[in-house]
Amino acid sequence: GSDVASMKCKADRVDGGYVINGNKMWCTNGPIAQTL
Image: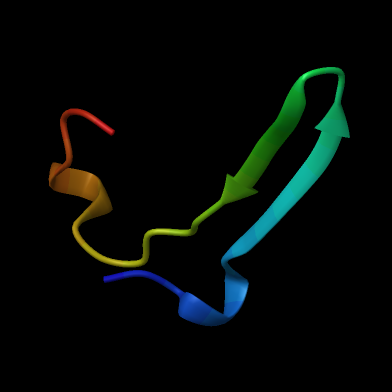
């Protein structure tokens, strides 16, 4: 699962397009995750 209220995304205009950055907080199974 994830914390939907904490998801964020931002698009910045750069020469030739956009740079998209964001984050997501995982709130379950973190201790058993081997690869994110």
